[in-house]
Length: 375
Image 1: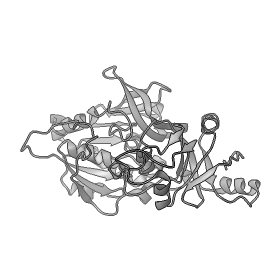
Image 2: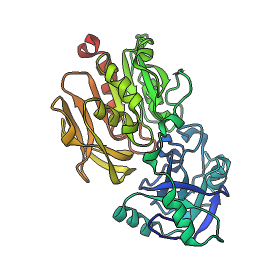
Image 3: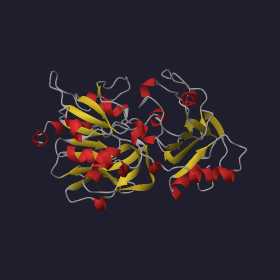
Image 4: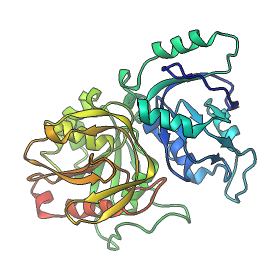
């Protein structure tokens, strides 16, 4: 049930429950497990445009967090039996274990066009076939929107902890930065707004000493760890709600080099006086073309965001470094004077291409640069 009154009947799989969410579509050809376990999807129901889902099952190596965060899954056809030596459980059972409902036998092409034309909408997946459709649609219209809730506080870690694991899977890419043997590890504080594991793996694989802290950690508490730099992670929801994160980042960018990804990028836009806005249907998928305006090179990127930085609101001290080639939206920022930069997309590529792994190398090099050391 969509809030515009659209009613679609399909087959249920996963958990036998009902759930409200905000419908977004993801165009990735593979990587459904990474999508399911990405904390940035909290509050959202995900429609996958790839028509056949579940054929390679579920592997514990591919989880981006300890649980599933999305509200529901919508697919054209779910595969009931996987064929993959890495698979440990079928997709439907995996959703059921995490209490997430799914529905297939849905015209996902039509539904994708509906979202593109009318924007992201609230939706209900239900097995209730007795209540009149009009009443169910009214329930959808009364359900909270993603922007009504601070989802970051629901997905962040509870206590500070160290992250030491680099790439562990045989299918992982090579490390984006090879530290010298015996060299001192630069220490960074990574703010967990819903951080994906492969971001933390990428930072650790670069030879960094990573300390993960909860989203509400004040700047003073972060600085007590004596970091050489700060990382601001991805996460769900509206960045403007995260006043605690913006307040902490305002202090930290004056002290140490800072790198932000996705929500972290949007928070930095607010830090420097800019604004963010809700996109009509966002960017969700592993095939978004982005141009690096400093080099002229084009990257195919993995993205998952419904908000974007408004370039007209940014001060002269902030430079737009990357743009999306589909719609011209801002995909990267850099401060002219401070050692601070950010990107809207996901260089850790889980799922997605590895074109942007160089950004982790850029961060490591910034930590050791004179500009960084001077701070």
